[in-house]
Structure formats: structure tokens, C-alpha cells
Length: 179
Image (cartoon, rainbow, N blue to C red; front, side, top):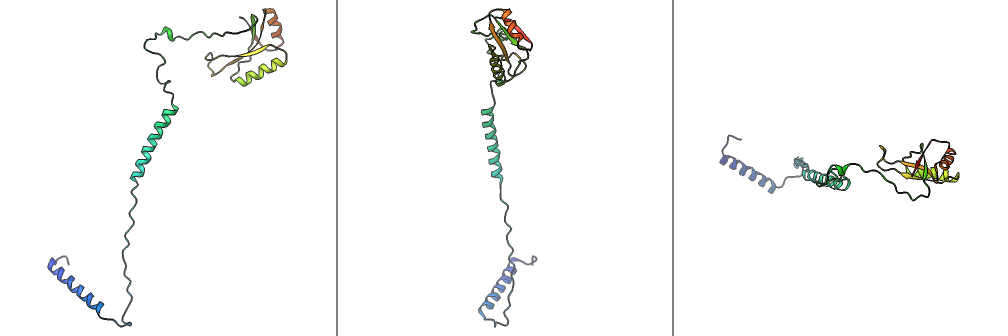
């Protein structure tokens, strides 16, 4: 059929159409009628183009990452904590000073009481107060390789002799400090 020219193809097509038209006009007795199964090819469903969904997910992920980073990253840690006007001498660590409002000159720091949480320090102070000691605790920030250190002490007492008498009742090691 491919060897034929367009005119021949057109002539054959017209003849077939005429035959089809003639068959549809002439009634066919029911006994000659037959059912023909005509197979119509079903057009396959095209796959969905999900490229736009991928783009939205990528943009959303990037936006969420920026939002999360902005809210959860401490940018002060990334930048140096000094201005250009400061010298290295100003950046040296300062001496930690406590200003106690205590009546007395001596306290005894309990050596075994290096405690890393405030709740334990309060519990130890309460136990000592029940036993009759004057006591409290202090917080030592940035003075240790631990995050937080609390020291329990008894006192203050007027002199070292009185402090020593009370500290001997502790049954633990202690260091007497004169304020």
C-alpha cells in the first residue's frame, strides 16, 4: 500500500466508504447478522508529572532549614565576644569575688560537697540545719571544668577556734576560710 500514490489511496478509500454506506442502507436478515467484537485500543494513562511537587518539597525544606537555624543557632557563639577597641589585657579572666553579708569572720567549707546541682546542695543544707549547724551553699560559676559547682559551708563563726569545734562535728573533711 505504501507503493501507491495518493490518488490511488484516495480512490480505494472512497470505494470502501461507498461499500460501507451501501451495507448500512440495505437491511440484513437477522440470521446473517453476526456480532463482531471490535477491539478499541485503550489509550494508556499518562504518568503524572510530579516535578512541581519535588520543587515545592525542596523549597519547603530549604525554608524550614533556614527558619530552624535562625531560631535555634546562637550566632553570638560564632562571632568573637570583643570589639576592636578592646585589648588583650581586658580579655583576661577576672577574679571571682563574692560579697557575703555574714556576721562572723570564719566559715568551714565541706570538702566532699562539690555538688553539680542546686537541689542536692539545698538537701545537704537542710540536713545540716536539722542537726543544728548554721550553714548555706554557694554557687561557683565558671570556676570548674563542670557546668555548675555548688559548695556547702557552715558558719560564719567569730573565730577559727569556734569554727573548728563546729566543723569537727561534721565527720567529713573541711577547710576553714577567714573572711
